Length: 492
Image (cartoon, rainbow, N blue to C red; front, side):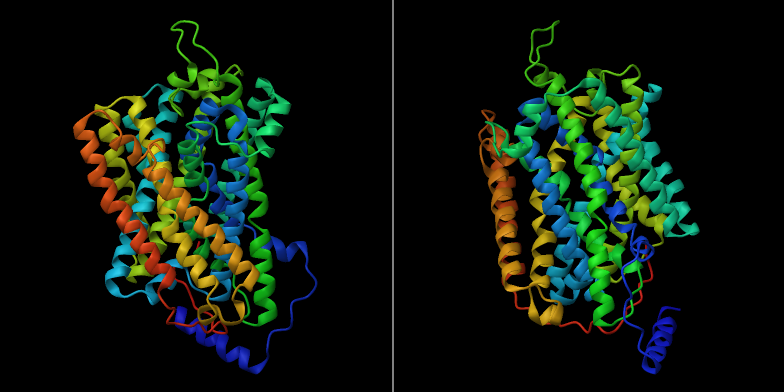
């Protein structure tokens, strides 16, 4: 019925143009509330918790500024998503699909799907840890069960999108309350906290933790999700209405993201207070070397039923993130390949691809291997971020693509400076000896690991630079007609 609806709205608008938007009201604002909460889930998923714990345990309060600035950066990135989604009525994957020839389109589709699957790993592992802490089950049981619970949540879709957004809002609220109670109980070092937020310092060995935070906060799959989610709000296609919609859509994620900044700082502070520099009385080892992350963080919590509370926060975070990654996978496939799977098949597909490696490690490996896996995912996501950020910035700064909605010169310079910084920092962390990714491999004493590191690093980084250079310099060929409203079949 999409075409019919579109035709209907077209013929109506020829008779009478819609009246200009009235004064801003709360009611109008509330109509746009929802997508921001959906997107902010990615900022409080188990992968983020892990990055926060790692950063607090290893560097104390010193890296809090990274949480703050990456979150502010991500608010700005979400604004760009709103522009592409509302002005161009394109999702990021559709915009990329219409610009790039087939071999590149398939390549970028694979990269985007890979993003979604590895983003799913920490969620699945987090659900496993949570059920292990709550009910004492083996971790792998929870990992397998996460497939079933996600299905249950996706079934709420038939009652409309507001129900889903509401459930997610409640889950985020639950996480915030649990952690704020905890924060109050632990008590923090005020001056050190303020210094950590205000003074940018990268302590020795902190680069990998910083990249982890960047990858965990500004999640690449989010750009695909948000460009699609904002389109669920219908807007008359006049300049004044679109401007209003872009404004409301840009303001809307600010509150959810501020909530997530507090949650992340909360976890980092607790880790800084309880773990950083502390020594285990039994073994004489530094706690920072012993703590593994999500699986054992709760034993440092001050409140009586700390582990149960932490497990519930993990469960809420893992579960809500798992829902949003399923949606994202749907938009990516639809945009790049013009293929649409039923939601349940899509969920099974994403889940299985993430569950298989997680179950293998959970059954045959150790808990610390699962935690390491999450750390590695965070750093990899930072490296994958440009594959979503570069095309988004390229489209938003292109006069040909966006027409009257193109970013101003000053803003374009700012965007490209930022994107350049992200590209360089990520590449450096990936290959620097202290970075923790390939650097840790090729500087190792074990010859096998050393060669494996080099063999993985050279093609990966070559692809990274070539693909990003291609996206930056390829001339834009298609322009948009922003007066036409496109119907989207899958809308959150």
